[in-house]
Image 1 (cartoon, rainbow, N blue to C red):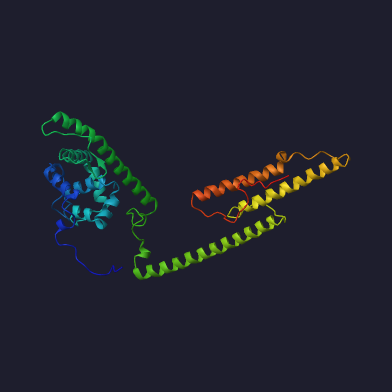
Image 2: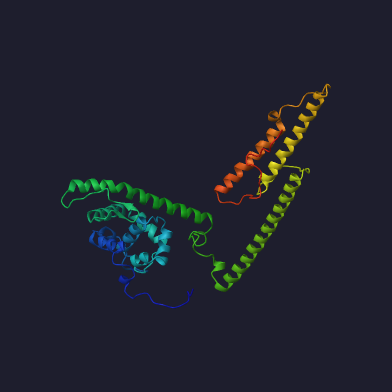
Length: 339
């Protein structure tokens, strides 16, 4: 993949987007509307650079909001990374403070013109503009009552969008201030901090971080392997009838060990029942209480619950696509035949 190969975008911005892109419709619609209220407050001369074109800011914000982009910082970034946004701002990229200030200073006028744009789109036959559905408004050519009803229908989502944008800007500004970066350069998640902007230093830092990640992964893999080996040894010891201490560990050997434990408990209790039966058959009087039936043994019952819990865990893991223990050949109900 060659990303350092030079090439040129078409010199005409009209070739940057297809002719049927909604950006062209939006720009022509804004041009047809009365935006003189914005222009009366625009700074054209005096000290400093001239202000941004209000029509551009209006079209830019309407398009952004219709694409679900509410944050002024995100709008600024899209003007750098997104071709449609670059066409809208004509590569005269406004900063996020200018974008937020424009909306805040003209909020009522902006909302009214936003609604008018949606009404024009509905009248032109568009079912939606970006993520904003407008097919609920049917506006005949000469029906002012229907137009008024459509305007009222669209004012609610416009007000909601403007409110969301205001709240999102406020939340981002508060987060930046809390992080000690009012400009938001270090906390927006898309711009690199100053220490990583130099490419040579960044490459070394990435290599160092990659080495640390590889070492951490290797440590985890070794620890996991040791746990697996210990669990397998414990399972084999349990299946051989040897003593095991503590809870059965989670993992692929859990069910097999639980079944081996249940088999030992059944065997041990069956031995008690057999001894008691042999004493009674010999005509002797057994000492102490007689053993309870197999189904009433609390140790057997507890072992069965452990087996069932392991079965449930295996079923859940299988549903999630996680590996289970295929070597477990005992019956899934965990109940070896008993006498």
